[in-house]
Amino acid sequence: MIRAAGRRWIGRLACFFAATLSSAAWQTPMPMMGAGRPVFVEPFTTGDGSAKLRDDVIGELRKLGSVSVASTAASAGLILGGGGEIWVRGYRSLNPRSGTSPSNGTPIYGGYLAVELRDQEGGTIWSYLATPNSAFGDVSKNLAKQIAKHVAEALQHDAAQPSPVPSTQAGTNVPGNSPPSVAVRALKGAGATFPSPLYGKWITNYRRANPNLEITYDATGSEAGIRKLLSGDVDFAGSDSPAAIGQLAPGDEGKYLFFPAAVGAVVPIVNLPGVAGQIAFTPEILAGIYLGRIRKWNDPALAKVNPQVRLPDLDITVMHRSDGSGTSYVWTDYLSATSAEWKAKIGASLNPAWPVGRAANGNEGAAEMVKEIGGSIGYVEFIYALKNHLSFGKVRNQNGEFVAASLGSIGIAAGKAAAMGEDLKVSIVNAPGAGAYPIASFTWLVVPSRDLDGGRREALTGFLKWMTGPGQLQAAALGYLALPRDVVSREEAQLLRTR
Image: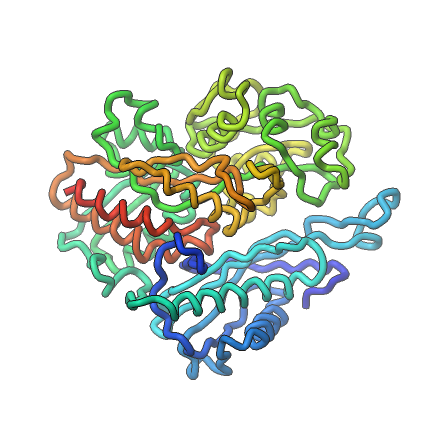
């Protein structure tokens, strides 16, 4: 059982292929679930604390009164389950002079819980990635309230939909998403590590309905993936930079199409021994650290925006990516958008000329380096920070708020997608809006606009159509946001250009 005294609650992330759809009008439509169908809550895959979490979720659903809870799976129309991992990041004492330890401090929690709602056929029709929105108290109750609230909103939103879309686990029986009518084929992709967890799930699930189609994706980094695409070694590439083709092959932009795949976020990760709370960063501080001007964790600029944190007199070890990286592009795009000095001296790039820092390869390598080095700071995709138990900071947005990455704050930033042009490229860093997380980005699949043989074109088009439909229903549990509705409509029109 999870205790307020700070007992560690640890489990494993279950492999869920889930969706994120709230009541926000800009998100991808959700398949019809059937208002009033009873929901059975499965035991959650969380190890210690699983039974309490299940009881708390059931209790919160019943409090709402709008969701019918079934006592058995057989009597239910929908199944709610999930898994994840919660850990104690450290302890906070009410007396700063006494230090922090399990004996005199209050536990500060970190973690994530992926939840999904399935129909009786096993099709995923909704999901959510819950993270503790309060670092203290009963973390099980905290997560249960979030889950119940979002389940109820999803069911209410569903009841208002004018027409149903059949749900599916892997895309069968969905209009426009039938398996390609080709013999055994192979599609090869390479590129960004930013969306790699999501692409892995998509490929696994798509192939369940299309066993004759082999698809592989090599997370080499954006630059290496784009270079492979340019040389014809792969059929598609993953990139988090809408300028990738222009930077690597000027003049060839018209030969390739960019398809937004999902929305994610880059977070500043830190390893500060003895500091369990989230560190607040301003754009000026982040630029100052990466320009090498701010070198100590107790620098006055950091102390000013973190008055409740005892920052150590410790050197800052700066980490950056060694490979040509879309994550680096998003990070430097944000710094360029918020710091005139950074824009003038460095700019936004897949592989910038870093003024200071140590290099690591890939999101996993970056996460591991920061995890090992006390006093370090780096940047990785949101889910990598969660999976590696890394603390990540809050960042000041245009409204002057210090905001942490979450599905909600990333979603607010994605509202800027309305400015997207016909080429489906747009930067959403430093997006306006209350509660918007400022380092959010689309991630794209890049494909040739021509020069594909008929079989490969048909196979690739089938996968892209599935990605923008049922595939979107698997994004949230891995920390990515489903595409805005209008973006999906534009992608459907662009798909015709691949023929």
